[in-house]
Image 1: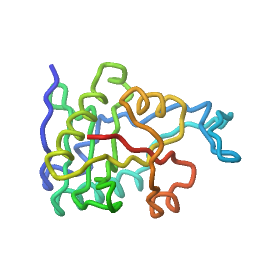
Image 2 (image 1 turned 30 degrees about the vertical axis):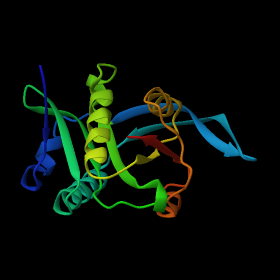
Image 3 (image 1 turned 180 degrees about the horizontal axis):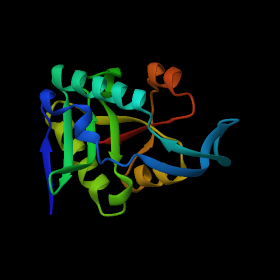
Image 4 (image 1 turned 90 degrees about the horizontal axis):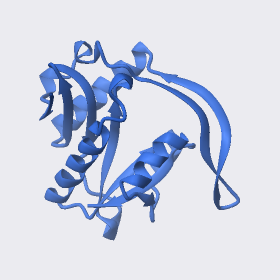
Length: 176
């Protein structure tokens, strides 16, 4: 049985992620070429290093401390997925809130956890004044398929900070 709950700052420590399996084998990714999205071979394995976990923990704590959402999905008390949404609106008339992370442990993918977390993030964003969620998402074909299934489209207005940090990510939005 899964339990979904908002995480508090003191819970967001390395131990929380002890059994979280951040592993993704990527073979193909979307790339924008001449203004068109195309699928290209771009094989790699995405695993988080210890430094990646430390940066994630810092970012998630910051999200909580600044009034944002960090929601976890737990199976038998073990974290199996999480989503985070920042609290500050941006994008002028777009009224975006930034979905900064959405991850599901490899052993629990394809069970609806990602969709449940995403829908909860949309509901939270709407309650906090957003018209749309902004998503800077991995360009892997599988990741993009998820967001398209959830009704996301290419962002009308790109967040330059995201583009500069992750130039190959796809910049997306979803109406809340």
